[in-house]
Amino acid sequence: MAINVKLDDMLYARRMSLTELSEKVGITLANLSVLKTGKARAIRFSTLDAICEVLQCQPGDILEFRAGAASDRRRTATGREPNAA
Image (cartoon, rainbow, N blue to C red; front, side):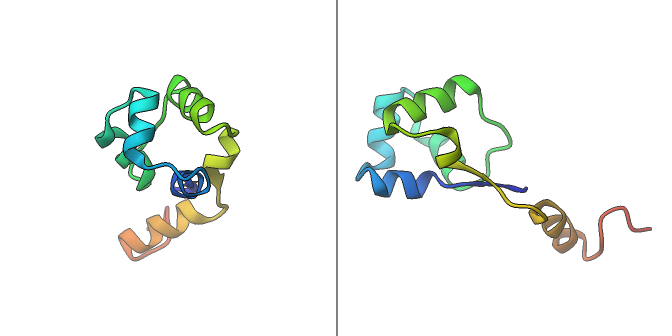
């Protein structure tokens, strides 16, 4: 996926644990862990809003777009270029 989650960086900058964030935001530790590790396939705006409010940051501080990352991941998973016959 071309979206990189930088939640770890924000937690470090704010000197906050994932457990603390979970308690303040009201989201399970398991769901935040999935987001933090980049395994989440989606995030609700209400969740993003709550995280940004607690961490006092902007969505762009947590999420980053990396051009070409999606096609690179597909290539490594299949061993060939996407849409290749």
